[in-house]
Length: 266
Image 1 (cartoon, rainbow, N blue to C red):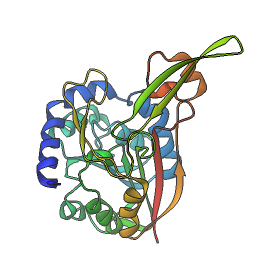
Image 2 (cartoon, helix red, strand yellow; image 1 turned 90 degrees about the vertical axis):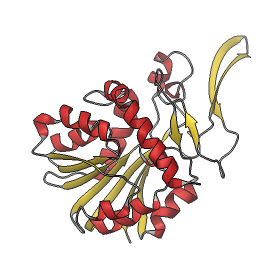
Image 3 (cartoon, rainbow, N blue to C red; image 1 turned 60 degrees about the horizontal axis):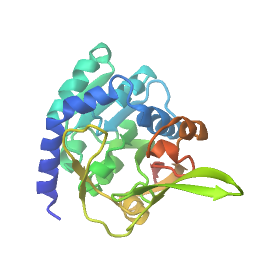
């Protein structure tokens, strides 16, 4: 895999559609973020007022701003220059608490320049699956965290929300009652190459997704000296499933599309 080529192409794609994603997430994030990602990351992070937090792959800064509103001092970065420009504009009122920067999450040296032992927490909310390599991030994180610090991530659930999920809608006649059933099926799990996915409805161009099995994802963290001490699998509620229309994750109350975990240094 040509990591540099894929990373450079990915950056250009995100710059091209930064305005779409900024409009999609707005000030508070889309429904997926608000219902699944943000609550699970905040629960695992156990944030305290005054904590110094690094937010990796911050996009338009929605989660970084939420951290600042809860009393954290935040450094937030993304490799898309355009997303950071938009994040700064949205976060102008919180500029004293959030420092937005353009940094590549695959550039270990650039991340280490932020300062060894500086951060109480590091968050990475739905960005790992956009990165062609995650080893540099975990190695840098191990140096950037203070003693007792934690790294909290949320990503596509490797076992369910992989690069090739197929949504299924079936009708069943059981004892004279016709019911609807929704499911997701997969073709592969252990070994899948990067693919371009359509992303959000209406997205102007597909971007790369990088599937990693659980052993590959967590193995990179373990190799950097982390242990896993918290895990959540957020899913939409039965009420969400009842209210939603069409085939989407909100129809699958029993299948979590997100995996969130907390890592600490051994």
